[in-house]
Amino acid sequence: MYQVIGTGKSRALRVLWMLEELGRPYEHVAVNPHSEGVTPFNPAGKVPVLVVDGTPITDSTAILTYLADKHGALTHPAGTLERARQDSLMQFVLDEFDAALWLAARHSFILPEEMRLAAIKNTLRWEFERSQRTLVHRMADEGFLMGDRMTVPDIILAHCLTWALTARFPIIEHRLTGYLEMMRARPAYLRAAAR
Image (cartoon, helix red, strand yellow):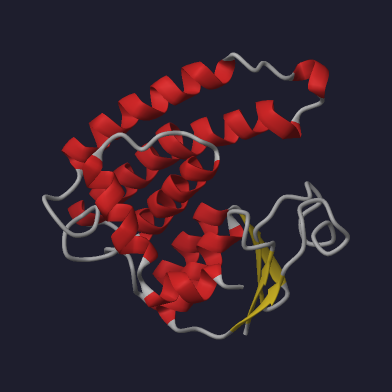
């Protein structure tokens, strides 16, 4: 059985959601970053951590990719053009959405006050909006990011868009608003988010 360490209000939600989509059993240890429940598995204190047979795996994207490859679901086979496109979309979402939201969070409440730059958030919002326009041109015409098949980047994007709403980063593309509604209506998401 898998063990997921981290609260559902963190990137650990991505891992919980993935395991729910896969229908795999897991134990959820809902602890905050840098707590005693995290540091034995990740000295940096960051969550999520997935413990597999006593071995910790850190970083939500690494965990999702591991689970997708291990269970042959929510991914395209390695070495295919579809997988290259999937990985390209995943990197775009991480670089343009996740990174902007993480930097805004750091300058809102994570960094010491004297190190925070409040004005950076305006630039990050502008970049976030610009990235939305780019992404909708790369998305499939309907359904998931790549069309009729849900893949790992869908979990990451839906998590980032949910995070954006909490962080007051506007979702300006109507297509992304509808996409997020579809993703958050999935039974697996609802089960993961309820933890």
